[in-house]
Every structure is written in structure tokens, then in C-alpha cells.
Amino acid sequence: MLETFETVARAVADPVRVRILKLLESGELCVCQVTAVLALAPATVSKHLGMMRTAGLLQQRREGKWVYYRLADRSLNTYAPAFLALAGQALADDPTIADDRQRLVRVNALPLAVLCGRGAAALDDELAPGAADSTCCEASP
Image (cartoon, rainbow, N blue to C red; front, side, top):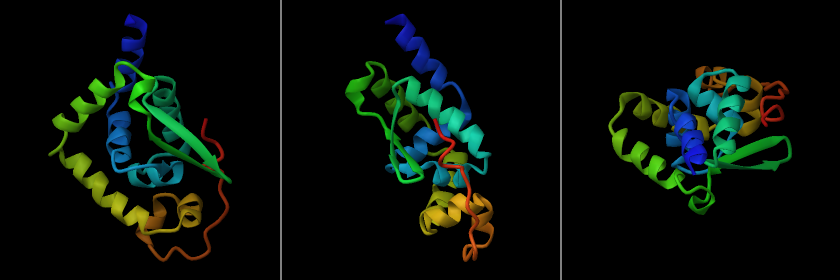
């Protein structure tokens, strides 16, 4: 039990991972969407997502070349509900979380192919013509 508690505590002890958890409160997201909102490298986001999945905080599914993450079913991890509830209450008014939510609205308005091809740059040019192929979603654990 202590080991499970420690694994979950470490998974939520990083500001980037907390931001990801807060994004996923709104529902399932593709790795490309998370990457674009946070403006981080796909490999960095995938590393964080993988750690939280291992801790039992997230579940993933694949659809074609895209990998989607969502908050895990609360029954999969004894401690996850308490940590998720704490993050939800404690950060309700955080300016970084509010900025992430605003960026998520813009990200959700773009096709996944554009996000996968352009990442956060797609937000700079929301028309983003000619999205290139990318492996950002395929590289996720």
C-alpha cells in the first residue's frame, strides 16, 4: 500500500503532470492536443503521460495513429481519487490552469491532423495549411 501511495504521490508531484491532469478533467484528449496546449515537445509530454498511466491515474486508447488519454476509472487505484480531488479543489483559480483551459478551447477547434503536424505552432496560425506528417502521437507509450 505504501508503495502505491508513493507512486501516485510522485506522479502528481510535478507541475506539468498536474497541468495535464487538470486538462483531462474536461475529457479525453489526444497526445497532440496536450502537447499543443502545454507547448512542450511530444517526447516530454509522452514521458509525463506514461508515468501517470503507470501510477494508475490515466488510461489510454489508440485510434489509428492517435493516442488518447483520459482520467482513469477511479476504481483502478485506491489513492487516485483523493489526489485528483485535491488537485481539482486546490487549483480551481490558478492562472496557469486558466491559461491552459483557454488554449485548450483553441486547440479543440483545430483538426487533429493539423495539431499532429504543427503542434503548438498551429495555434499561431489557426488556419495552418498543409499540415505535415508527424509521429508525435505514434511515439507515445
